[in-house]
Image (cartoon, rainbow, N blue to C red; front, side, top):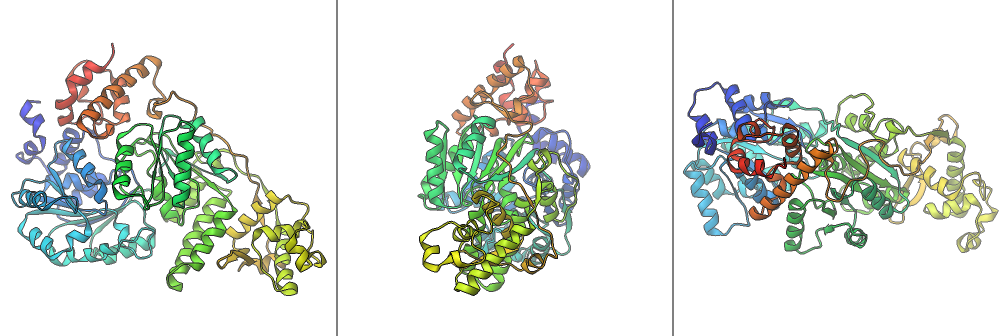
Length: 625
């Protein structure tokens, strides 16, 4: 490899006459440092590079970006990437520039002169990729600009945002149908990591991509271990997860409210765990700072509402924790998918309790929106509850939601420690009878607390005032403890045997209650398990360690840590995230290959031509003997 080819590998390829597939493989190897494509990547690239449209459903970490980056390099002109992620565009562009791709962005963070300079680069054919938000793309002025430029393709990232019934709707995406009308000869690719069959159909229709070729990869992320446990003291449970399994790891913790975000971040810091809050109530500059620090630091935890995370491309997030129930499986899947993008073992953990069910029902019932919107929200929640309460493989349940069949995974909590079940038909009948008697004989409806008090026959001012002790259902449930009743009630709510309605979450018999009351349906419920550590892939490591290096021998680990120290220094000097220098997985590959020449280093996966030219000698010097 001569120096001119290493400095500008893309130009060298464009000047050649290699076949399209060979050229794509050459770019993959020389620019990105990988030997082969994964899954449908090659077919998608061939479809787009040949001028065809594509709709791509591929899990987070599955390599979606390459599916439009490489065709943009193969075709003449500039690839336009439509993304809602203004806050991350600078990092995305920096990562591309780091491998020798000419990239830029147009968004509101640029002043007039900066934006004008980018526009001139576009018109001069000096850009391979240009990022912009959907609201900018549909402006008449932007449309006029694009008509004057040579365009390679349009890539619509996070395409599920066009679906009004999806989990992350963005109204600005609805205007993207203009691309089909205004640029009929420019190929388009729509990509998302989270789409049910219904969302898939809707985004195809709204983006006018009915003639596109569709690629649906498996949604399975086998490196992620899914675990859901009963909520007791959620912050203490979270601390146990971090200190026993993920000490020194980067992670994301999701909470429902801003107050909970702040309190959880403070609790982690108080225990010596580096953490930062992120929510919409913080000043925009603070949010941006916290996001950038999370991307650039190693071993930092971000505690956030769902306002955080879309498009986060940090490969070494080792765990995602939920302290509150997500509203939908799409949201849960997208959020948990931010763990383990590098393919290394990672954890998706959630603490879930009765209050989560009641609160989510209340938010839907008392929230704004049409009855159709609320019905859709209830359907999303029901599916999420079914995932939480399943006694079979969680991965099977998760993939089935996205229309895919699978076998039990052996790497989720229900596979590793199958839950015990018990016949809860009689307790369910007693609970329903208590609800009916309270309503008929006293004209009263209560939340879970008072209903359980009646079932246990406990005196309190509310029962005394209403003479509940005179009811035939008073004290009929003493065979279960209060904790067992709450567990039972949570599962009955998830199954529609009981419902919580209104602002106060009062309990009423659910749509599935008649068959239970008549004894026509047996109610099998799971016994709540005590919180457990991961059965495999866990274990303590030294602070700042990396799960990617768990398989290394002591001597190899020493070299790995030396490379991490070197990488941190380079990243700090360049003011970029460490993973933009090399990922942990690539550092492990270097340690295992133990190259002694630059040429040998170039054979390690993830070491492309530009990085080899820029860092090759320094890496060899940083490797201990």
